Length: 301
Image 1: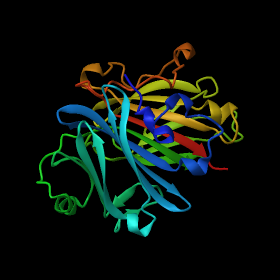
Image 2: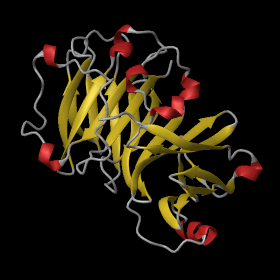
Image 3: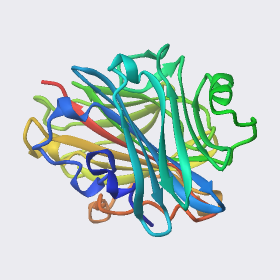
Image 4: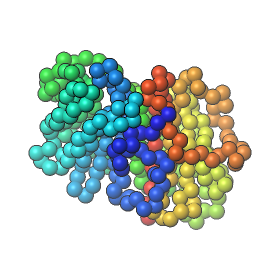
């Protein structure tokens, strides 16, 4: 079990510290994705962080040694500078040169920092495309002079900040190459004596927590696409913290061999509800790695 690569500071997932009320909401408009890849036969994690500020969009790509839990190299790209909207940089890791290539000149963005189309980000090592993101694969292969070949990169984890007053929504997938779902978290804590927490997937109510003041931390198992997904929540800051605090949710896809027989059964014993967000993700080297999605939910004033 291990965290997201910790070497990326604010760009890494530090679940234990995610509820800090000192963090600025405006500085947290970012999405971090982690991919398990192989370079020269060795397992590594490549972290791609998309950020958004008043100055525009930003991109960070880092390579982490998953066996030694050590940051090997990192490149920061500021595509709001015209000359940086496409280009390449070379990094050194695993005794070889690693090339990071990007083209965001035609990228289309929604309300968040992650582009939806018209872009590519590629990572090349030993003339192989280790990781390729975006819908411009042909352009990426042409630019890198790499022969197209299937990639064994796995999308293993994602961290995202979401904002709202009562409803917090995002697009989510719960496994590598899985279906993209509409995920919605609903909770009204303003002037409500008995807040209710609900989680919907594609409009279907899959989880409901009553007596939230007693159950502000907990876990629950839902079923999505026939797969068990463990949901962990911590809404302490919403109920008892400052207005600048955020709630934390983690959706952990359970490998088939670990799926529990009590799918979607409520937890009735409050003493079992405590879950520490310092708990680490499963070791990326495991053959039964489950996907993890962490959402930090900020209430707009």
